[in-house]
Length: 373
Image (cartoon, rainbow, N blue to C red; front, side):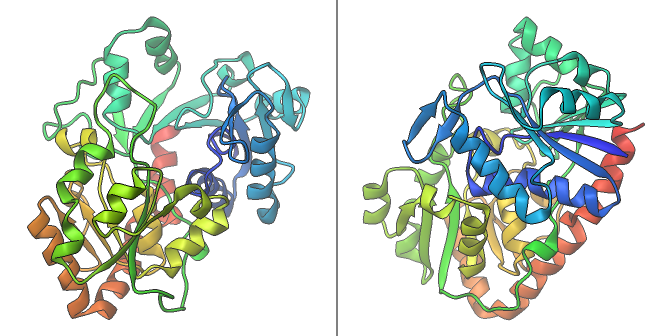
């Protein structure tokens, strides 16, 4: 089968974002499918060297190439700049590939256009990595946005409770099928013990997307701001938030971009860590979306246990050993203490959960079955 995967590696040139698309590409290829990466958002790229959006796409296209080349995908991508210029393979080559492609996957808004070559692909699916925000945006009824989603044959979401009685987010005329982010576990597995005793995470304090929904991580994180004073754990946050505030409360903030400059920097940061402590966006928590972090999946695949905030995900995943939920400060303190009591058992369980629940060879076959049905 020939697959086109539209992602946002160039628009958001961060290591974690790159891995999201990369694990779909590698997982699908491992299953025997032919893959091509596409990016056609109509937006300018973020240039990390300049720390600003840029009309010159070269930072983003270099990042795409550097991400894909080590996996022999360096000639399997196309980036359409906001001005309509094509980079990577030519427009003619892209159209030729699409002409007999079988499946089009739009991951996280990697494309916001229905060009003829995309529309003609027999099976078209959207994968929503930002549940609640996406559904609320659709519910506003902006015509072009609603019509865009009507162009897909199937819609998927990382929110396990979206469209169920457990979550009150409106879905209207749309049906959302749940899926997890696939993880190519061989890319994360390491036999090396943690290089540090730090409990870490990589996070965005507040995004500039969906500004009409006050649902960012800052609203949740402040509830746990004093946690370092109540636990023996030592923390390090790769975060773009208020470093002085976080440093004063014992969180050990470091620059998120430096830890995410490349997929390899991002992976090294996770593999060096002892465990993850993760807070979710307020929208995910307050609406009981069932969202679960693709970043946390990577910690688990590396054999690093995780203590992460409850969004309703524990109804769908193993929890208690290796993966521990919390809703209150007291539960977070207890979860971190449990890791100390038998870290080796939690590390083993973390890897087992990743293999059983998130491995690409487990996630992608049912995803494809629904996508092609």
